[in-house]
Amino acid sequence: MGQVWRGWGVKLLLFFALMVAGWGLGVGDAQAQEDELLPLGIIVQPEPGELEVWIETDQRRYDLGDEVTIRFGLNRDAWVYIYNLDADGRVSLLFPNRFDRQNRVRAGTHRLPRRGYAFEAAGPPGVEYLQIIASRTPLELSREGAWAQEPFPDLGAAGLLEAKVRSQLRTVPADDWAVAWTSFRVGRPTPPPPPPAPAPPAKPKAWEPSVHLGLDVGWGPDPEQPHRIIFSFGGDVGSPDLGLGFSLRLTGEEPHPGWYQRGPETELYGRFTLVRSGSFDVRTGVGLAWQAWAYGGSPPFRSETRVRPTFLLGAGFRQGPGYTWVGYHVRRGMVLGVALQF
Image (tube, rainbow, N blue to C red; front, side):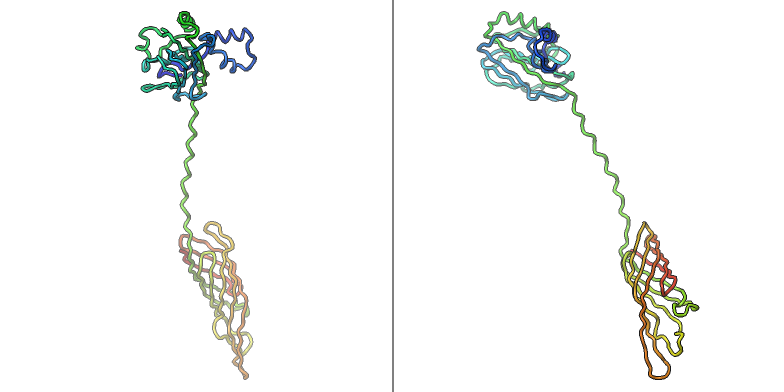
């Protein structure tokens, strides 16, 4: 484990693992041998007797810095000692310790740490072991005054501890002591997930007008009298992409004697945007133009209204609220227009 106290674990003696390998016991993978055999090297297992003990941790794997909880149980009152063997082969006495010296434990299930301290998985990374010894007779396993120097005394290498424990247990009847062990793995802390990428700044929404009010003028040859240039004017209203327009064209005299116009040629048309790219667009218009004519010669007097289809194709440019466009109209000729869009 770690240092709030020194090294957390109860791993088996390295020399015992080599001994087992030399004997040829076990054919499984190296990790299975490490977990199953190494703890037996600290204390030789006694013959099953009346005293029974067990030990476990709340997890099988810890990241560095995690807190560790130990649970153990025994079926008779006894003195309890718990060792940790870390991945470097160092043994520490976890219980009893400077904060919790009362290790005479009643039969039942118990939990460590109790109040006032904590066990922390401080590494080094690898497999660590806990071994518990329960004895009906108290043992002297740590040197006198060790708790004054460190809360969880360092008992040195596993081989030195084994000799000391064996000498202590020679005076204890075989039925009056028992051992058990467990293991867990200490790893690197899981790195925190990377912070989310900052959201790109919201682009300001481009201003889009919703109302279009326009005026225009046209000039071009009269379709009936191509040698005459006729002027016209008009306007349109709607949205920037769709609207209704009108125009008035002052025509010349009818080439046939006796006929005259009774007002300008009037047009109504629908306006549409075909393509828009940024501030530019292509627009078209389709409509009808009509004009009343009368015959002023000899009786009988008569009049008629002449209706013609119209078509416009043009291009426009918008700058702020202003809009300018130019196009060609089949009856009005060239047309130049301006508008306000807002």
